[in-house]
Image 1 (cartoon, rainbow, N blue to C red):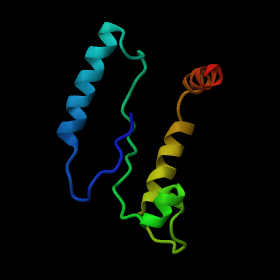
Image 2 (cartoon, one colour; image 1 turned 120 degrees about the vertical axis):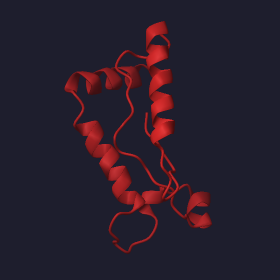
Image 3 (cartoon, helix red, strand yellow; image 1 turned 180 degrees about the vertical axis):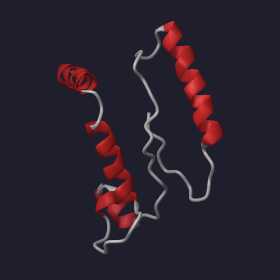
Image 4 (cartoon, rainbow, N blue to C red; image 1 turned 135 degrees about the vertical axis):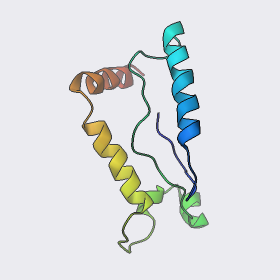
Length: 100
């Protein structure tokens, strides 16, 4: 699970704990996979140009000015975290995606 569209200066600690608790309960009932987890990376809320949304462009591609600490960096952090997952977990996800 990835927390997405987080408003600036918002503490999501309690929401994260509640979500973790529900995930653990669901694991026990077999509703979710046993290796489900909350990603450390999270994606902040970003002001988006309406035209880019109409065109279906990902938010991380809007604009050309390189700034520090942007939503683009958030998506890159998510990607890094996925790539750092155990190979077994990635292979399992790829097999599931190929059967759909």
